[in-house]
Image 1: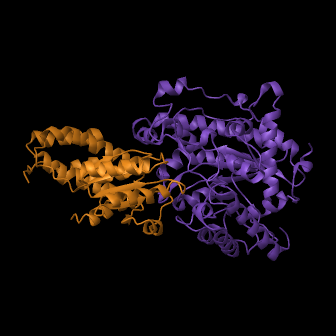
Image 2: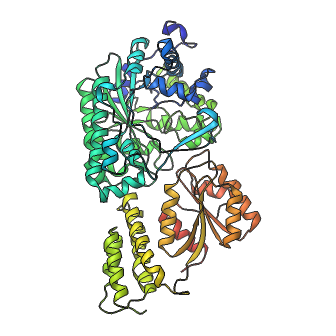
Image 3: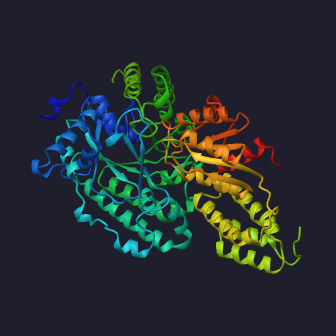
Length: 383
Length: 215
């Protein structure tokens, strides 16, 4: 099916408007929508189609979901992701590469979210205590991917089918996230003191593979931006000290931005937690936009007031409100945020404080976007 | 206090604050060899040292790794001191039951609170993660403690806090329940009938001391 035929609603994607807003350029225009990604549970609920977690992950990573059908199932899942992004009003579709750092340090519980996501109604949690790499022997034995083995099938497929005006946003996993998950945050914490060379080696391996993936995807037609997801903080500050981030993590962030910009692509950072102490360094790294803000930590209006003249501010509709609030309250808050951050007509994009997660009821998520469209229509005559 | 004048407990405290487990243990051994009472090492060096660590954490000068390293030093020294602590030497500041609520497997935030409570002299029963309300009730009955701490990471697991508080209060209304975690706020704590909200591990200790009237 031709991409245009699969959409149920008409939208005029305009990546140039998104790019303008992310680069904080004029003239003032409609506030674009942004998300790092949507959980399959959200895609499923909004589109009314089945998207199982396993099929989603395999397709997103460019694996053959069913080798015997030549990847048709994988493409079907990616088509649903494209439909979701298009019909929600995004100017891009998100895609992953096949870069991953396999590990088994997961824990499983019953999922308490509103929308089903994982098979069997379960939720998967990261084990923070330990991971597959605890010492040099583990490091040497670890099945590191080779750069040439990373699949870009999902990126390339979506790049070939995005409609006019739409681009691909490639989501890359973070250097700190992956390095700390490979050891477990607790072990990683001890290793900073006990085995700093091992920490450096893991960060280097993760960093170089991530940069290799970035260097490949920015050469793919229709890739408009890379979106690095690297959670560095918790409610009151960074998880590890700014000094540790400067030593092990930020050099790779800077190089990733250079790679994207060198190819004329944008570079965005999604990072949860209170990062006030390192915002200047995130800006200095050259990221075009910073994503993930929560009212409990710092309302997005305050972020925009403090840093909005130096970096685009992205999302920030509080996840707790989206998950538990009424649609009226969500609409009111959306309008409040847009009045504060959208009036200048650049440097802000509307979205959730984290992602279109499966613990947000679909109707609440749609209410936020609908209010955003109305506000845009009122102020810029365009939705 | 049976402290030898030539034993520098300040230095021992400093080693603990630096997260130097070997140094903390070595100086504790030296102090014992010089006749310093184990309870003095505990009360005059280890507990105050963890107090400094908590302050530094609250001021964002210390982060998760620094806190964990100091805790490792504290537990290593405690292992050494335990055989030397006579009955009655250690009077806990209070006792508490802690756990992450049902449906939630997030552990590290709760673990940091356990560390800081133990570091300030509390006796803590850590129930782990994904703990159903009835398990909290059992633990309260078994331990006779008057303080329970509940942790949750997600907006969707927070409601288990309210169910747990209700179960605990039905069992013993005098038990104080404090809550914390990424999505939890003072307003939410108030709305579910919690006795207090701690925005971080250090705040949780202050709250616990205040609720139990510990000086």
